[in-house]
Structures are given as C-alpha cells and as structure tokens.
Length: 359
Image (cartoon, rainbow, N blue to C red; front, side, top):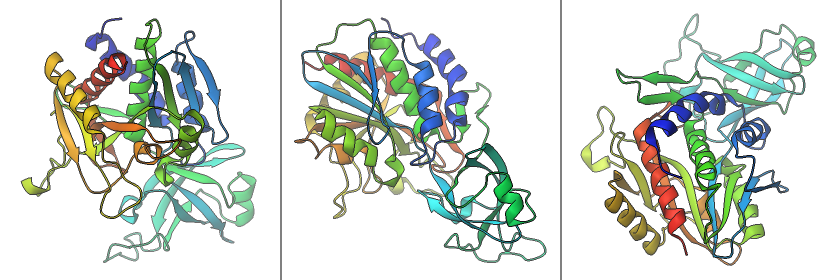
C-alpha cells in the first residue's frame, strides 16, 4: 500500500473530531477505546483487551515482536464531594493546572450519561476578584446547575465521577493546516496508530506486530507496564506529543521542538535522577534519521529532561525492550492543544517505513 498524503490528510480531518470528543480521562478510557475500535480494519488482526483495559491489536509474524503504543487517556478531574448546595468539589486526575480551570466548560461522566458543567473558583472575578494565581485546586468547584446535593445526585453526579474539559476541534490558519482541540495528546497519535494498522493490514511483515492503545498513561504508564509484561516486546515505539516551544517570549536556548518543522524523534526525556524516563536506543534513533533523510521526511530531535511516555516504562519491563519514540510537536499541551497536520503526517510516514524495516 502506498503512502498517499492527500488521502491520509482527508481521513485525519474526518476522524480527529470524533477521536478528540471521546471523554476518556485516566482510568475511564472506555469511550475512546470504543471509538478507536470502530475505526480499525475489519481483517488481518487479532483484537484483545487485558486487565488494565488496554486495547491490543496483533498482526502475528515470525520475526521480532514490535510494539507501537499510543495512549487512550486524557487529563481530567474527579469529584471528591458534593456539598449541600449542589456544588462539586474536585481533585486532579492527571495533569490539569489551576490556570486552565477558570470559567471552563466540563463534562461529568456519570452512570446516567454525560452531564454538562462549568468549573470555576470561589473568586471568579466578580464580585470577588482573584489577584493571585491559585497553586492548588482547593478553591475550584463545578456547577452542574444543581441547587442541592439531592439535585446533583438525581442527575447522577456523585463523588467518584470523572470529569473532562471540553474544547471543540477546530482548524486554524488560511490553509486550515493547524488543528486545535481537546486531548490531541494523545488522540492525534491514536489516529496515527489506527492508520498504521490500515496501511499494514494487507502487508506481510517480518515483525510480529502489536498496536497497543494503552490506558492510564497520564498517571504513570500503568496500562503500558502491564502490556509490556504480558507481551514482552523486542522493540517498543511510543507515539506522543513533544512540547512545541515556538512561542512568544521563549528564548532560543529554551527551544525543544517547533510546529511546521516536521516530526520529532525522541532521544531523551525525564532523566534528572528519575527512575521513570527514556534514553532512546541509538540504533533506533539512527535508523529513523536515515529513513527521514532517504525519503525526504522533515524531522527534528527531542532531547528534554522532563516528561515521559509509555516507552519509558515499557523499556525495562518484560525482560527489556529496544525503545524509542516518535512525537508530534504540540503547543499548549494539556490545555487547548494545537498541532500542524503535515507534522502529524511526517510522523506517520516515518513510523510506517520504520516498522516495515524491522527484521
């Protein structure tokens, strides 16, 4: 199957809104898993789930086990308590910062379905201004339109309900090549992995290939740990975002990656004494760079001593794996995330060519 950028771009535009709109905070990934499953090829693969609810797509082969992983979950909140007036007090469920919460639309996941809400602070501006940025979620709450605890409970809103932020997916710029939306980290990478399964469906690979749509990455790669221990892959490639730091007031010495400069090949992430972090295998990095040079794929390098992906926890499980990562440069990560479609296609082409090269 040929790599047709025009066709793939059209598929991205058609699919990404549906992928991003799935509400799937860490530990509650069912909606995203169902959407991904609906887009997967109908033949050529074995589908399964494990005890951590990872969705695993397997194309059996006689060569080395190659696992490509993209995570299903997104950052979110969880309701800690509902007070007598119906206000819902919250805890973070991976990655949300107080600065992202003022006056935002949220969706509460209940046993009765989705419930709309607005998250705000006890000092919303008027009548009480907030003069300093809060450092915790202590003074943030969700208003679901209830006027008592009983009202909220009747709506299905109760302690333990997960919550996601809600942003529509939009295309920006005169050429509409910039995409912005909720949970592009990691749904744009889920799209890449879905398309990879389509591209490989009718091919005879040397590799024993696994596409892993993992759970609970945002809280420490818990799903990926279990997948690695069960599958014991020889190679692991994680698909995730890289910080695009081409922003106002950002000094050149602080540059990590930039939008419109191609896909990002990971060399290193969290390494300052942390147990969780990745130093990518040099041969994997070298082979990816060689593929990019041979086929004219724009690329850049990520070497950043913070953050981590599923590759960092899979690398040392199940006997160990040769590991690396392919990233999408992304602005405003864990907020209104923004990426450049040609960068996403560059990453997919590199991934497709690399997996086919593994012997």
